[in-house]
Image (cartoon, rainbow, N blue to C red; front, side):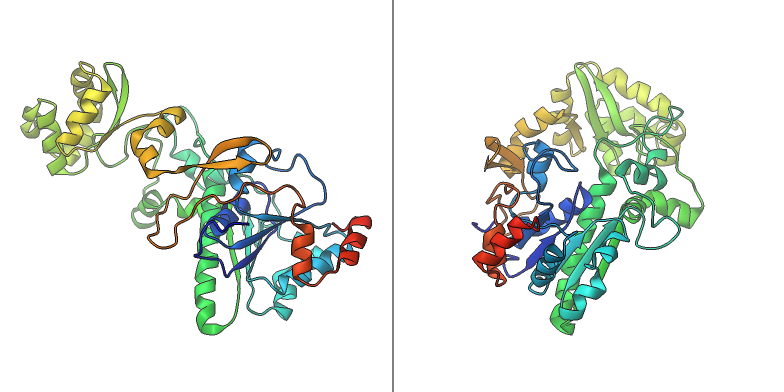
Length: 392
């Protein structure tokens, strides 16, 4: 298989993950050139996370090889442990007790491979009062506070439009793996790294969480309005809406001048940040009296020319047709085995020497069985026997 990047070409990863948080983590490693072996049950077709030909599966599982193993059989578990002895990383997102029951937990695998980095992603943590609960992104969004600060005031809790707890847990697990691999250069030892959807979601509260921890303030819903920087939010235009981010006194002055309302800079209702906060609704009304006289395109160009952050509010189609997005090349071509010529979302990072690209589409289930097993010493006869016995 061609390399997506040379950055991690020396790293072998065993991927036991399902659904989204785990595959998100492993995708980060695969896209940067790690030899990722996706361990699957020996059946093809629909899986947790959707069918193989679905856009979601295709986007999550590129740049990998596939090995089918029945981990409920002795032969399947033995083959996995042999592979684990050659691996740098194992990633799993089972419920906390599953890996121990299968005999593929960190302590078991590290006994024969002390350099192994073993990453676990769960809903709520590997232990504690909620450890046995099934994890799901929207549950973590609610329990982690995000839904209480998303949406318009008085309209009840609102989830965000992407599985952000899943995605952030996966990205943080990938970061943890990289930290552990770097540390291994000094100690020669691997370690067990853990995160959860709940931990990731609480961490992503960021300044909203800090407002409570440091000031005792419980933030509420603010809709499209920024909770502290005013006027920042969504404003109506002649033909739709736009985003404005007017943060700080200097940008406030530029904004008022660009809008033709320099008088606001000395108006006691709007002159200072506390005054603008107290009179937010009145300010919004006066801003929209001006912005609705011209198109979004007019105001976005005028504001950016004046040094005021402003932008269009695109639907997903408009995002990928945007000239800057196209210039950045984040939508990358790939020839899917199920769908033919298509595009997937590439990495949002540019590297001057070791760039990432989508080198291979998601593999067929078991596509690399013979190749992978032969790499760890299985003979053709043994592989055929495993196939007959339902171990692969």
